[in-house]
Length: 178
Image 1: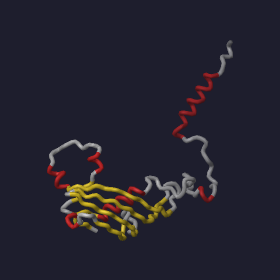
Image 2 (image 1 turned 90 degrees about the vertical axis):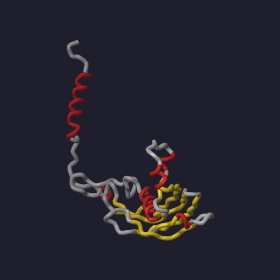
Image 3 (image 1 turned 30 degrees about the horizontal axis):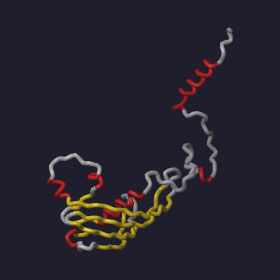
Image 4 (image 1 turned 180 degrees about the vertical axis):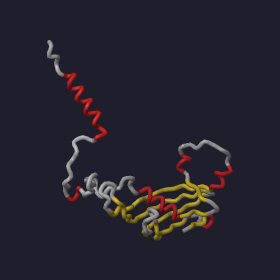
């Protein structure tokens, strides 16, 4: 869905609707409900809105899929990319990093909504904060109970630290010759 910037009235524009959003290449699009208020001041465009939807994510520990509710509000400022391209090389300052751009008098609402949804998804999704994950040997889900695998006492990568610990213990004993 594209919004023509020059068609935005002086008092602003309210838009509500539903857009299909695809989270990753393998997933089916899911309907996102949105509401927007778009205001144009000269060539700058200010967008304030909210997005609501539910996404199915795989847990980062047990790999089971669960539903994550997305309910986010946002504010964005857009400038014409043509003006930015015309200015010569310049160093970006803090406020410049928060700017977004539109091209050819059009703003892509679909990309804006998708971006907001992706920003709302946790980097490491967990089905619950106390998810126990999977056994590294047999793959059993620890949330369903323990497995029969023998637990190794020491990770082989830490074996040299065990030797170091024994060396320190031996040095700590009093000298028997005294």
